[in-house]
Length: 359
Figure (cartoon, rainbow, N blue to C red):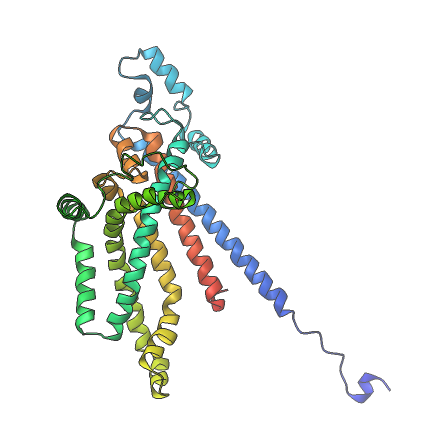
């Protein structure tokens, strides 16, 4: 008796391999992220290239000087490849940047990549400590302000955020130096270290606090901490203003959700409702906020570095811009832009790891 005689059809086809489909989706997601990263970097390099061409600064004169003859000027012009079409110049610029070649700084006489390698750790250290201060104070402040909406803490948080957005950073920096260094003597003065400890700690990471701990030099650590705490606190204040405001906004949205009402009806304590339920659900967007805040401190600490004579990337770019050193300006701009792109990529990766639904 055949299957047709018994009325039975052919054996059903095997179910689709869900794991293989998930792997394909994951691979497409990674490919899309990498393509987006490549296009973003290409756009960044294109913008910096255009900036270098539209700036009212003649790079040839910066090399040969004002007293060079026309023949010397023309020779330098051709040697720098400025006589070629812009497309060819951009391709050449793209290849140089991808190999880490930003040219030579006119101001220092050193390779720009070496200068950046020397000054960038100071900015990273300052921005990292500022971000840690902002997160340590801003997140709890935003959570408590949302939990006690309309109360005294909420009003304080809103005033803190408003002042943080409104107060000029250079004024706060000068007042901080006057009060805490000039009058009270609680912190170290401008600079990254005192003269006594300058150059005494072997450079391992470029981060003075970390290198002094590695060397076991507690005197150098205390001196470095006394110099960094004031500018880092200043940046941390602006960071916590942004982080606390966004945390409060995220928490208010969660606390008004139905699942929070259900949790309260079930008899959960208010502490458990706020921290175990509502706060857990804002961690993912909060990661993006913190990453953007850190990136903002990396590129936005120019005035702080100038006020406190902090030898970081912001001060380096500013001095290069004032002296017409476009190689240094463009090199620093590319580094800051790359940091923003990588921080966004990192936050996207963490978002996907913490929230499987986004995969």
